Image 1: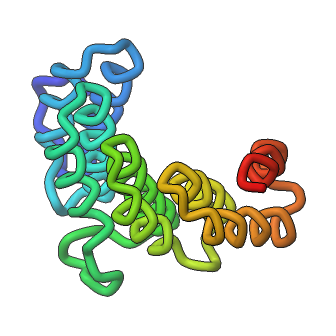
Image 2: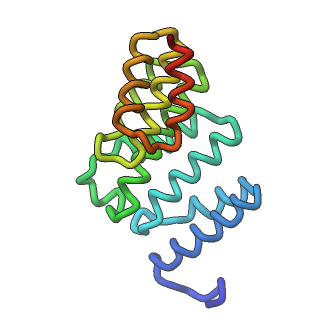
Length: 176
């Protein structure tokens, strides 16, 4: 289909997301954002576009706007089907947005806020081990050593095959 031919909004959202993602991968962040903002709320790619726009804002160092994008995803109630199409990717994106908010807070030295966002990741999430590790690291940097110790121990016992297990072991040693 030629880009000048009219297509249904859902297909236009798909095409705009793919274009935006390709531009992002090329490091053309401004052009990627231009493509991503055209995606309709009715598109299943809308929440993915918001997340990627938040990542772009983070890479540009605009943490305030990045946090706003991540909050739009993380703060949306799960039953709000008008705002986001809830499919298999939705909950993964929501967890990634929560981790993104925590990363932003951590990078700004707001360790309590980071800790809060890490603990918004639900217990059934595949990202829970990441959240535990990063929360432990935030608490270590804040010098809340008892909390960091508990979080590292929880990660090490509950997730023995987690990719962050070696780093968590080192962190546990630093805490001691």
